[in-house]
Length: 115
Length: 112
Image (cartoon, rainbow over all chains, first blue to last red; front, top):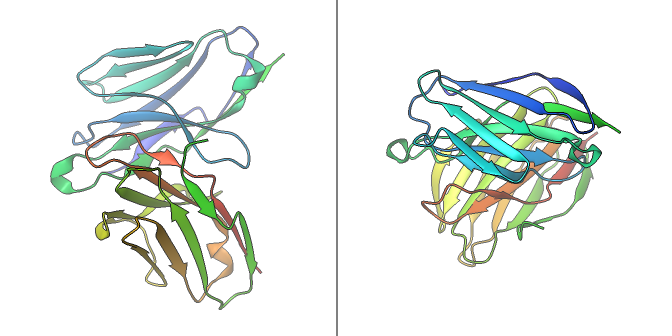
């Protein structure tokens, strides 16, 4: 099963609040979990990524939390700003043994940060 | 700017036609991936090339084909176009063995 399930579909947060987006996966062969940010009319931009041997990774206001046993990972955006308003995609990459190095994407979360 | 370039930015064509989308990967990246983004299907992997060779295929229709040239740029060919092929087409590149994939700005294809 190659699916990555993402929730919520849309999220509205006040400026300064915490935005939380969740993803779950089935395939235990996934070995790399990036998050991408996409603005309208632009390509997805790599935001932050984590590997399954780490439970948390933080870069600035962005944190990934990873729960290997639950096969879940989430993106936390601290002190959310109106400029963070975009669509966020979680993704997972297959293991090398299957030659499947492509990314499987979640369905996306449209984040709106109100001023 | 990811360093990945795609041309053209926009393409409008009629059903039954054939188009070619072009992608230049980041300098030094050997692997190119093609993705399709549509409202109902989200971001879907189409095909991957590494150093000129096809490495993986996803949900790519038989009407679609791709290749990677010796200078590492890649082309995605879409033929017998249908209305449902209207979408954003992205390419991404990465060095082999490294997880990060960097996406280009995309080509918006509209089939009328």
